[in-house]
Image (cartoon, rainbow, N blue to C red; front, side, top):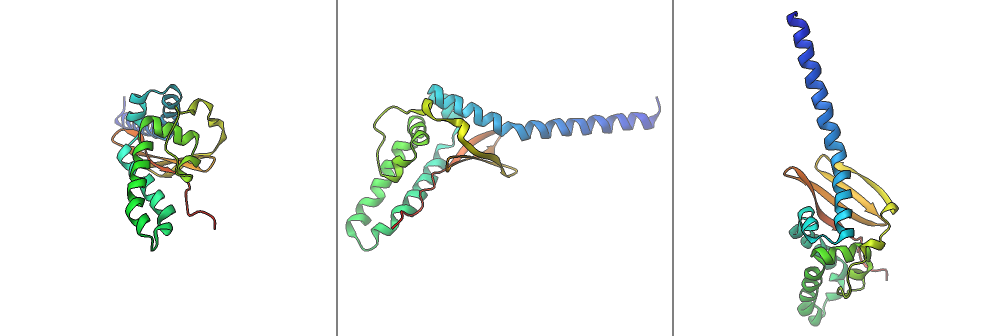
Length: 173
């Protein structure tokens, strides 16, 4: 065997390995999202917890609620006292495996400032109504389901939900 063919073979193997690694990485968030939906449907809290960065989701929900309702507090002493407490209570109620499942099933609950009152109904969520699912950066993957954006981030060697954008925005006046 000539040294040239040996080198060519090693380069070919290295290229093949790189292609396989890129394919696995490119499909991994889709597989991870599928596993997330399976965990939600089955109500497997341990599996949901493993796939969600709850401190990041809490912070995301808190920022959205503050942005939505901050204008209501302008000049009102009562809102300035009760607003942060109410927002913290809502975020604590929804930033759990069951609360997250209910929120994905009914995103308008936070728009209407409702606490979770019933078991999550994720089994009724039609996951086929996805608008898109794609990379927004090499370590961020977004899934849009009827206006709810689930942002997954590659942390360690797995994808975890770290932002839930409910499109709360300011209410229409």
